[in-house]
Length: 144
Image (cartoon, rainbow, N blue to C red; front, side):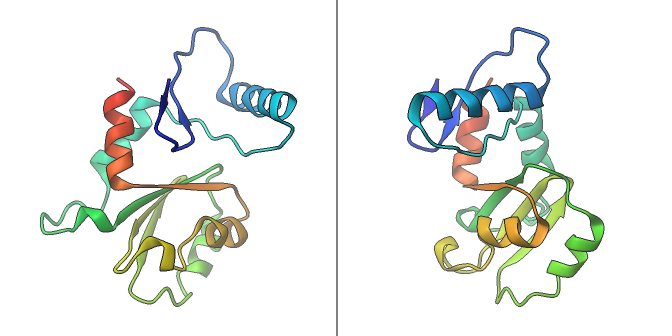
């Protein structure tokens, strides 16, 4: 099943394929059927649950959740690359990277932020995709 036009697909894993095998298979099917390549990232319900419970910006109950975003990174970035991007001027927007997740708080509108998928992909040399907090919560509830 899918959720609106978010690019998210839910499915039950019924075989012993690894996450890498599943993502490669999905990407191959998309290319074969639609003629273009798209990055595919796989996240489990448990991983989304961990993200929700560990979001460092939620710890402050006064946080405006409409300003929260989660960027999923295909790979865990090298510590040196994470340290390097901390020096970039991101205006009033902030981020914290934990493993392969970037927790983002945008003071303004996300589409005006420098903390885009392109920023993380270029600086951390990995694939990235971002969802707002409302979508994360909805995807979590739908994935049970």
